[in-house]
Image 1 (cartoon, rainbow, N blue to C red):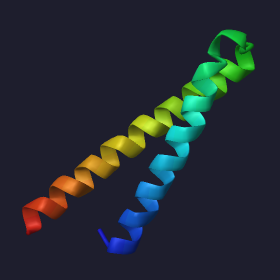
Image 2 (image 1 turned 180 degrees about the vertical axis):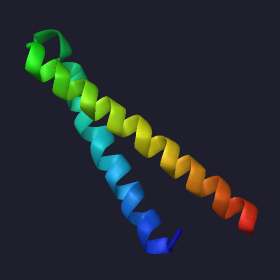
Image 3 (image 1 turned 180 degrees about the horizontal axis):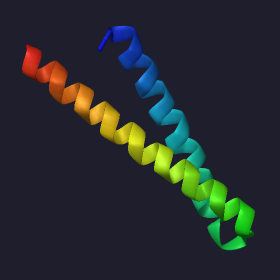
Image 4 (image 1 turned 90 degrees about the vertical axis):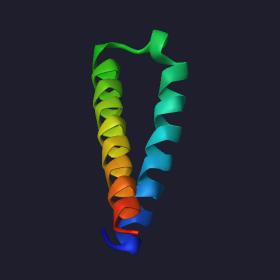
Length: 63
């Protein structure tokens, strides 16, 4: 992956993690629609973690 693409992935991972943390504090007060959004954000966060780890290992293997 290109260095610029990796930087964007890292930034997106950090931003989504901050949003997810804020949502997690109010989980008990969420209604059904809010919980659905929380689960979607959680899925996206996990996907980003996998992609970032994969790119880090690929970068490490190339070097």
